[in-house]
Length: 160
Image (cartoon, rainbow, N blue to C red; front, side):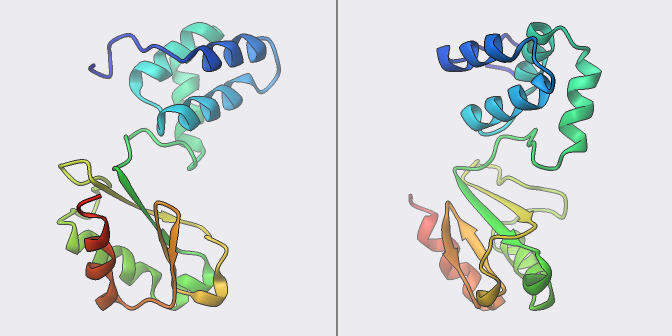
């Protein structure tokens, strides 16, 4: 399905939208629910939210782009989150992002590999400051890392 085609929401999401349609703050709540269900917010989903909530599409995109939590690109099957909180940043978090992108042949602005197997994104904090620097792959946390460990970690997930 192309991103501009109609999107179908689950019965749970349909019900959620009906419940929130007239409440203050409905747009943010609906966008959170869409992303929770689909992993990101596609163009089609944004258009459908705009239609159902009767808000301009520009407002939907304004909210989606203002809050960094909302993703407009479908994440890879394996989600690599690299912590850039203060402790991780100071101990080499950016080097870990750069190494992940190098290993996965991602360009500077690329987030998802061409095959859709991996996505790499910075996050503000994973909550493991004592293990800095830290990455998380699909919720599995790896701490006290150096760049040379990244290829081995990524290799664990290549055939998953």
